[in-house]
Length: 240
Image (tube, rainbow, N blue to C red; front, side, top):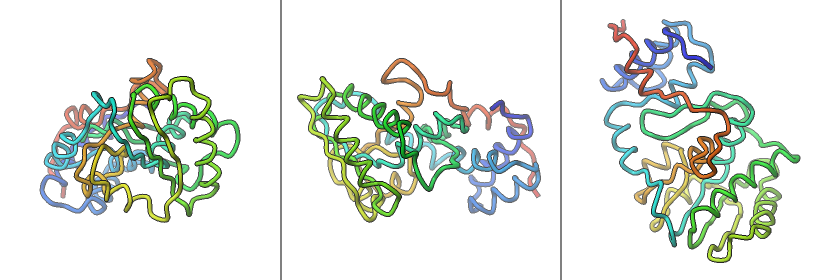
């Protein structure tokens, strides 16, 4: 997806509104209607553009290296959906807060065939490359097939040859967001802004690392659209 000049102007205006305290949904409707943005373009702004203070604060939480012997709690569906949407060719953005996010389109469910095996294998291979001490992957129990998916992840992990030093468990929780946000030690893996803002421990942008190929050397869908660059090239205007 090649961002248009209109989208750049909209991104700049949206950031301007957020920096001045406008609510995100209200600001998004204002600039979305003004520039006649598509649903996907509005999603790019909503998931990719944040106020300067929020962007700096969240970016300061990111840790992407020196994770050996660390305990990691993974917001499983958040990471899996990022991988799946990138593989499906849906827009992926590098947000102004430094996290990679998909724009969505399949939030309700993941595929239930060999495509899930591919996604889960990519996740497990990425985790194995980090030499972690312990990994806990949590999936949302209310979502379809989540218990089967947790079991499949554990089976894939057990077949890897590089896992001897890392313990991995995958399971379900009624409210993964609450459990991950309450993590008090180690590192969490998510791009969910509500969790990042509530949790005090460092955050690994695991989905972003996988999508960009930083852990495998091969990106899934090319370089994500850099929203900070888009904001910078947009022409600021007075929004009325």
